[in-house]
Amino acid sequence: MIAATSISRLASRQAPQVLRLRLAGGSSAPKSSSNNYMKRYLSDKSSKEATNTTAKESTTNTAATAAKEEPKKSWWNNTQWWGTAGAIAGWGMSGAAIYDALESSPEVISLNMTGVLMVYSSLFARWAFVVKPQNLLLASCHVTNVVAQANQLRRAIEYKKENGKDDEVDDIMKKAGATAAAGAACVLAGPMIQSAIVNANLGVVSTIAAADAGPFTVHFWAPMSKWMISGASFLELDRPTEKISLAQYTALTLTGFFFSRYALLVTPINYTLW
Image (cartoon, rainbow, N blue to C red):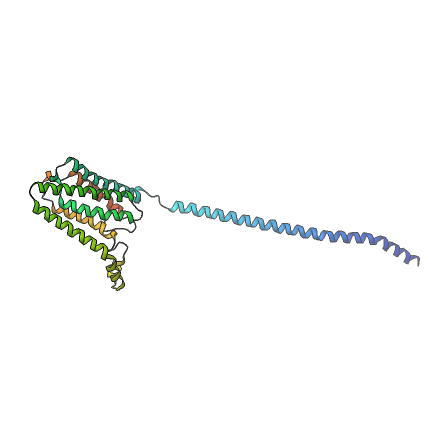
């Protein structure tokens, strides 16, 4: 009986201690769980930061590699450089006509070349406006050249009239009228004819008609007018040297040189101009 009582007293003394231990153990469990959560959070954050850093480094390396691989654009492949040089040469052509109007006799005016240059500059003014990249400097110089050449044509006609060559003047006016009428007809009827040929599915013919630089576009006819200049020059191989405008032919030679390269750099590439 005494032993039982001793055991009971010992158990009652130990109970609060056990309870305290249990409570301590129970309170430590949430603390351990919170620590584990923080560890996982920090681990995930570090992983994301590492991934972002790797992605940034990869992007930087890719950009650096692309910059190294991309060839530097020299003046030889620079569309802007050749277009500007050609436009300046074109202004030389306009300047030559203005110079001849101020300083030279009407005898140096070639009616064949003057008419061709008016057509040529009209087409190239349009071409320079629609080509990519757009060349407004070139377009403006050709508009100026049309005006300058028209003035030269006026001077030549007046000179011939003063020298009793009315029949020749009438012939010039008829040719000019026919050329203007033919040009207007082509501009008006061209889109309808092109559409009919393309829709007819004629194979290569339809493909050529639909081409970006095909025969129904200014990309074709503007360069073709360069051939008209060459033709006019060949027709006057026997022209007396004192009746040749050196200023005009110098400017024409320079435009031919610059545009031979420019034609290969624009969009669409223009092999006719080349």
